[in-house]
Length: 179
Image 1 (cartoon, rainbow, N blue to C red):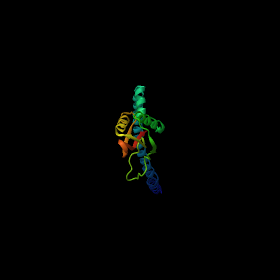
Image 2 (image 1 turned 180 degrees about the horizontal axis):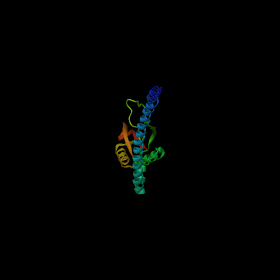
Image 3 (image 1 turned 135 degrees about the horizontal axis):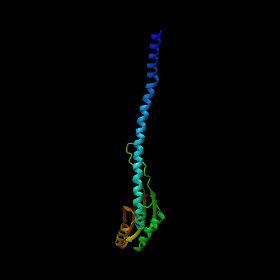
């Protein structure tokens, strides 16, 4: 009876190992794999935090004048009233009066699908449309001033309709950017 009991206990312990302990060990190895993934992610996050800290330090070390210029080049928010006012003032220096001013903010993820998905943009773009009447020399001076302006502005199209005595109707479409 003693050998039967010892054999029974051996089979019972082997069964307990295969049915209870082994699945728990498999779960433990899966949890260890997740733990190592989380640790790798934490390392990446800490390195990103260090980079962010160094960039903030670099930004704070810039003179106030340079930071103000950066704010003009790529503002935090699209202040369309100020932008239109600046463009209108630039146009007025060339004897141009702006007409039919409109803008449309772009939807950064419109039309994106999983197959054509690209990384999200970290900036916003706004399309600004305006029209005016002027001669070619005034247009050229106006566009040169827009180009020399600190504000990032891409002229996308210029539509020209003929007029009398060298005066033309212009429709300009430009894209401006903000964070």
